[in-house]
Image (tube, rainbow, N blue to C red; front, side, top):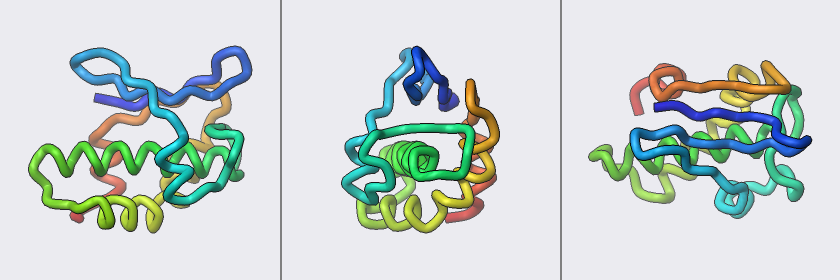
Length: 114
C-alpha cells in the first residue's frame, strides 16, 4: 500500500492507495491537529503546505496501524505525527513538486519501532 502525492490542475492531492482502491486524504484533520497551511496541501519545497501534507500522511498511517492491532490512542497518534512530521516532510514530501509515491514500508522504516 502506498500514498501518492500529485499535483492536478495546480492543486496538490494526496491519495492512499489500498487494496480497495484510492482514498483521498483531506487536510481538515491535520489542520485541527496543527494548522500549518489554511490553504491545504502542497509539495516540492520546505514550507507550510508540504508540512501539512507530511502531517496528514503520518496521521493517516498511524491511525491505520491503530486499527490493525498496534495499541495507539488518538492522543498518541497525534503526538507521534506532530513530533516526526517535519523530518518526514523533508525526506519525502519536499523532494519533488510533481508526483511523489511513499510506500508503507518507507513510513514504517522512517518511524522505526513505536
